[in-house]
Image 1: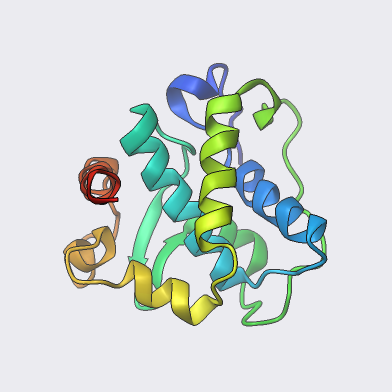
Image 2 (image 1 turned 45 degrees about the vertical axis):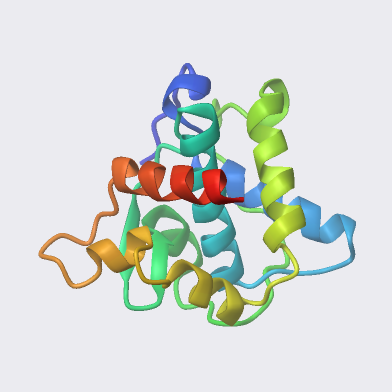
Length: 162
Protein backbone atom coordinates (compact mmCIF):
# COMPACT_ATOMS: atom_id res chain seq x y z
CA UNK A 1 0.00 0.00 0.00
CA UNK A 2 1.29 3.46 -0.92
CA UNK A 3 0.12 6.58 0.84
CA UNK A 4 0.38 9.80 -1.14
CA UNK A 5 2.16 12.64 0.61
CA UNK A 6 0.62 16.10 0.45
CA UNK A 7 3.86 18.09 0.73
CA UNK A 8 6.78 16.21 -0.83
CA UNK A 9 9.09 19.19 -0.34
CA UNK A 10 8.77 18.53 3.37
CA UNK A 11 8.45 14.76 3.52
CA UNK A 12 9.84 13.40 0.25
CA UNK A 13 8.57 11.70 -2.89
CA UNK A 14 7.74 8.09 -3.59
CA UNK A 15 10.87 6.11 -4.44
CA UNK A 16 9.26 5.16 -7.75
CA UNK A 17 9.11 8.83 -8.75
CA UNK A 18 12.81 9.30 -8.02
CA UNK A 19 13.76 6.04 -9.74
CA UNK A 20 11.75 7.03 -12.81
CA UNK A 21 13.65 10.33 -12.98
CA UNK A 22 16.93 8.40 -13.31
CA UNK A 23 15.42 5.93 -15.78
CA UNK A 24 14.24 8.88 -17.88
CA UNK A 25 17.68 10.52 -17.84
CA UNK A 26 19.23 7.24 -18.97
CA UNK A 27 16.67 6.81 -21.78
CA UNK A 28 17.39 10.36 -22.98
CA UNK A 29 20.99 9.22 -23.52
CA UNK A 30 19.95 5.94 -25.15
CA UNK A 31 21.05 3.92 -22.14
CA UNK A 32 19.40 1.51 -19.74
CA UNK A 33 20.06 1.06 -16.03
CA UNK A 34 20.11 -2.05 -13.89
CA UNK A 35 18.30 -2.44 -10.61
CA UNK A 36 21.60 -2.09 -8.74
CA UNK A 37 22.41 1.19 -10.49
CA UNK A 38 18.99 2.66 -9.76
CA UNK A 39 19.07 1.69 -6.07
CA UNK A 40 22.46 3.33 -5.64
CA UNK A 41 21.64 6.46 -7.66
CA UNK A 42 18.38 6.97 -5.76
CA UNK A 43 20.20 6.58 -2.45
CA UNK A 44 23.01 8.97 -3.43
CA UNK A 45 20.47 11.58 -4.60
CA UNK A 46 18.54 11.13 -1.35
CA UNK A 47 21.76 11.69 0.60
CA UNK A 48 22.70 14.85 -1.28
CA UNK A 49 19.14 16.18 -0.97
CA UNK A 50 19.30 15.69 2.79
CA UNK A 51 22.69 17.42 2.89
CA UNK A 52 22.13 20.28 0.45
CA UNK A 53 18.42 21.01 0.80
CA UNK A 54 17.92 19.88 4.40
CA UNK A 55 15.00 17.62 3.49
CA UNK A 56 14.45 14.07 2.28
CA UNK A 57 14.14 13.30 -1.41
CA UNK A 58 11.96 10.26 -0.75
CA UNK A 59 9.83 9.03 2.10
CA UNK A 60 10.65 5.35 1.63
CA UNK A 61 13.10 3.56 3.88
CA UNK A 62 16.61 2.54 2.88
CA UNK A 63 18.12 -0.64 4.25
CA UNK A 64 21.72 -1.83 4.61
CA UNK A 65 21.63 -5.18 2.85
CA UNK A 66 24.65 -7.24 1.87
CA UNK A 67 24.55 -5.72 -1.63
CA UNK A 68 24.52 -2.18 -0.25
CA UNK A 69 21.84 0.41 0.37
CA UNK A 70 18.52 -0.87 -0.94
CA UNK A 71 15.19 0.94 -1.10
CA UNK A 72 12.80 -1.78 0.04
CA UNK A 73 9.92 -0.36 -2.01
CA UNK A 74 11.92 -0.59 -5.22
CA UNK A 75 13.05 -4.10 -4.33
CA UNK A 76 9.41 -5.08 -3.84
CA UNK A 77 8.56 -3.75 -7.30
CA UNK A 78 11.51 -5.37 -9.09
CA UNK A 79 12.18 -8.48 -7.04
CA UNK A 80 15.05 -10.61 -8.28
CA UNK A 81 15.70 -8.63 -11.46
CA UNK A 82 19.46 -9.00 -11.12
CA UNK A 83 21.55 -7.27 -13.76
CA UNK A 84 18.93 -7.21 -16.51
CA UNK A 85 18.33 -3.67 -17.79
CA UNK A 86 15.13 -1.98 -16.69
CA UNK A 87 13.04 -1.41 -19.79
CA UNK A 88 10.06 0.56 -18.50
CA UNK A 89 9.21 3.22 -15.97
CA UNK A 90 7.81 2.01 -12.68
CA UNK A 91 4.11 2.43 -12.02
CA UNK A 92 3.36 5.31 -9.68
CA UNK A 93 0.28 5.26 -7.47
CA UNK A 94 -2.46 7.76 -8.35
CA UNK A 95 -2.11 10.96 -6.37
CA UNK A 96 1.65 10.72 -5.93
CA UNK A 97 3.24 14.08 -6.75
CA UNK A 98 5.92 14.23 -9.41
CA UNK A 99 9.12 16.25 -9.39
CA UNK A 100 7.81 18.80 -11.91
CA UNK A 101 7.11 21.44 -9.28
CA UNK A 102 10.37 20.97 -7.42
CA UNK A 103 13.30 22.40 -9.40
CA UNK A 104 15.69 22.08 -6.44
CA UNK A 105 15.16 18.34 -6.10
CA UNK A 106 15.30 17.94 -9.87
CA UNK A 107 18.63 19.80 -9.91
CA UNK A 108 20.07 17.45 -7.29
CA UNK A 109 18.95 14.44 -9.33
CA UNK A 110 20.51 15.89 -12.50
CA UNK A 111 23.75 16.67 -10.64
CA UNK A 112 23.92 13.14 -9.25
CA UNK A 113 23.27 11.79 -12.75
CA UNK A 114 26.07 13.92 -14.21
CA UNK A 115 28.52 12.87 -11.49
CA UNK A 116 27.60 9.20 -11.07
CA UNK A 117 25.34 8.18 -13.96
CA UNK A 118 28.13 6.66 -16.05
CA UNK A 119 29.18 4.28 -13.27
CA UNK A 120 28.12 0.67 -13.52
CA UNK A 121 26.46 -1.15 -10.65
CA UNK A 122 29.69 -2.50 -9.19
CA UNK A 123 31.35 0.93 -9.19
CA UNK A 124 28.32 2.45 -7.49
CA UNK A 125 28.27 -0.41 -5.01
CA UNK A 126 31.93 0.15 -4.13
CA UNK A 127 31.18 3.85 -3.70
CA UNK A 128 28.28 3.23 -1.30
CA UNK A 129 30.27 0.57 0.61
CA UNK A 130 33.18 2.89 1.48
CA UNK A 131 34.39 2.97 5.03
CA UNK A 132 32.33 5.51 6.97
CA UNK A 133 29.44 5.42 4.49
CA UNK A 134 25.90 5.16 5.86
CA UNK A 135 25.77 1.54 4.69
CA UNK A 136 29.04 0.68 6.48
CA UNK A 137 27.79 2.30 9.68
CA UNK A 138 24.62 0.20 9.74
CA UNK A 139 25.38 -3.08 7.97
CA UNK A 140 25.47 -5.98 10.41
CA UNK A 141 23.59 -4.10 13.14
CA UNK A 142 20.40 -5.54 14.69
CA UNK A 143 18.31 -3.23 12.51
CA UNK A 144 19.22 -2.74 8.87
CA UNK A 145 17.43 0.61 8.51
CA UNK A 146 19.77 3.43 7.43
CA UNK A 147 18.60 6.52 9.35
CA UNK A 148 18.28 9.78 7.41
CA UNK A 149 20.42 11.50 10.05
CA UNK A 150 23.35 9.16 9.36
CA UNK A 151 22.89 9.68 5.62
CA UNK A 152 22.62 13.47 6.03
CA UNK A 153 25.83 13.68 8.07
CA UNK A 154 27.81 11.58 5.60
CA UNK A 155 26.66 13.47 2.51
CA UNK A 156 27.08 16.84 4.22
CA UNK A 157 30.73 15.96 4.90
CA UNK A 158 31.10 14.68 1.34
CA UNK A 159 29.61 17.87 -0.11
CA UNK A 160 31.90 20.04 2.03
CA UNK A 161 34.98 18.14 0.88
CA UNK A 162 34.15 18.59 -2.81
